[in-house]
Image (cartoon, rainbow, N blue to C red):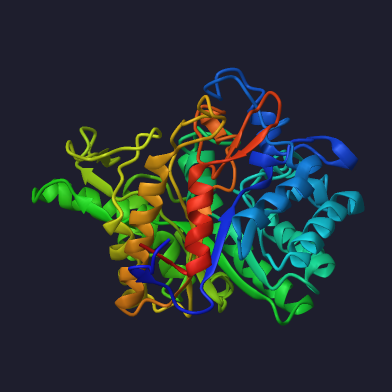
Length: 452
């Protein structure tokens, strides 16, 4: 690569990300307990191709080879999640030390190769035993999460510096307990609101637990955030965009930054009959915990959202520009939205540091006759989004790292194995791994700390 057009600051973190259920496999190995995804994938019709994460990328057994591939790419950092039921099979109580041993070995090997581990504690795989007791809509799950965070930090905190408490609480709450297309597959609006509150509360309690046992730790949360645009100047579309932005973005950003829940969203929920006890949600004690100081804000960005008034006048409808390029997930390719989002976050909330904890695209390019994967569209996507990230830095955003989603093709939740986000191509029958062209391109980006 020639001298980069977009140079990044010295010390910028270049990484890639995965999550436990999507890559590990080995659902009962070494004493692991079941998660809500082990249960959900066994319900007929929940997964497009009828698959599960039982094998996935077999990362639980092939992790050493996978670290070698990270070294070949030249990663500075690897973001992975710990499987809660692998560590605490019942969600609480007896620790499964054999499960912790896996992450212990992984962390040591990463550090041997100067790859910084970024540990996510919750990426949607709640122990089924806790779901049987009510799951995230119940307050005790937040307390259990803090206890689990303490267990992991006590084991890994002497070597792990960077912690992400919860990944995308909106997805875990809204799509798990209301829309039902993610585990546990419920359709209850009140459960969804309570789950969102307890996920945030669990985040705050986990911060305290981690800092108690690992004072040098840096702790943050990863939110799925999107710039929201009204489809037109029609007042109904403008209000629909306000509602969508409030539900997805502000409901999480505001309390995390000490503002409490947005009053307009609380009013929407009341009018929609989705609040049981507003006083409970607005407890000052809870909000003091939720707003505990963080060291960084993790941003998962994939697309902007264009919103218009829905025919039922309650749930806003999402539109896509007719001229937009879209990925195979059906998501709009809109890199300037990343700049807009990052600048807005820096201006409005002033986080100490921001990390792009996920950004990527699904394209199904597989090996050609030469055995290589020529995924030009992924390279173009990443290149344009890195240029957008560079533009945000130039505008004063304290952006300090970028993680591609994903390190490897994996189990893409309800989409099964039909969507491929990885820098590494996986043959899910043989478990063969092939570095895609995008992996070699990313290696060059990392080497020069910039993008042409």
